[in-house]
Structure formats: C-alpha cells, structure tokens
Length: 184
Image (cartoon, rainbow, N blue to C red; front, side):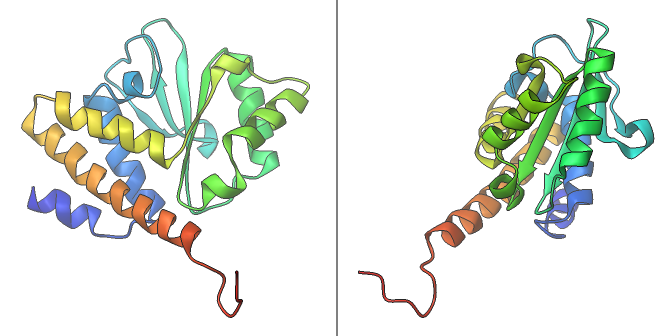
C-alpha cells in the first residue's frame, strides 16, 4: 500500500498519474460497469491510442470499443471533440469523457451534448458518456466495497481518497466568495 500512496501523493492534477491508475482499474476491476458501460471488457487496455487521439481504448466482448478521453484541469477543445466523435461514430464505438477538476466547469455534460448534436457526423446520444468527478468518486467508492483482490482494492481505496481530496478542494473553491467584494 505504501507504493500506491506514494504514487497518489504525486500531484492530484497530474493527468499522467490518473492515466496510470485508471489503466490499472479499467483492466483489473469492473470500473466500466460502475460507470454505466454494459458488456464485459476484455482484459486489455491500450493507452494513447489512434495517434494519441484517445487516452484509452478498452475492447468489449461485443466487438465494440470504449474510447476514453481523460482531462484533468485542462481544456477539451472543440476540434479535439470533433475528431474524437467522428472517429468513434465511424467505428461504432462508445466515447467516454472523464472530466476531473476544473475541466468539468468549461466542458460540462450539457456543453458536450450540445456539441454532439451540432455535429454533422457524431455518435448516437447513448454512445457519448460524460463522467464528472462526483460520478467517478461514486464508481471508485463502490469498487472499494466490491473488489476482492487486496491489491486492486487498495488501489481503488487510495484513488478514492485522492478523488475525495480533489472534490473537497473543488467544492471549497466553488463556495469561496470573491475577494474584496462585500456581498449582502
């Protein structure tokens, strides 16, 4: 557990650290099911796929893939979303956006859905899933309760702790009054 704690104490906003942890959880736990993806994922997770267009590709037993884009305190551009939606629709894949930290402010579920509707070629509504920090926390917390393998459970517990820290920081930021202004 000490190595996991060391890894997760790196930086809450390190996208690379989140990629490493999520790759392990996606490959060894039912995280996709917890996030609403039906079908059984095959035991292989590819990272930075299709020329780095997606952060993860998880093959499903039905011959489809889940293409995952992870953003932590970073911008999700319209051009990037357009390329990802065209690629996912063309392959009949599920596209999942995992938005953590401040990314969920500028690229909300509603914004992505509106963008998807405006596109000429885009995946069906049910094939675009947006996962925010609260949703990811609920999914990872349930992994802690149901995962039997102690190493995978420890990884999920440590990641849940990190996500809780991020959520508390994010909520504290949202509730903080603007400095220098008297608000009655």
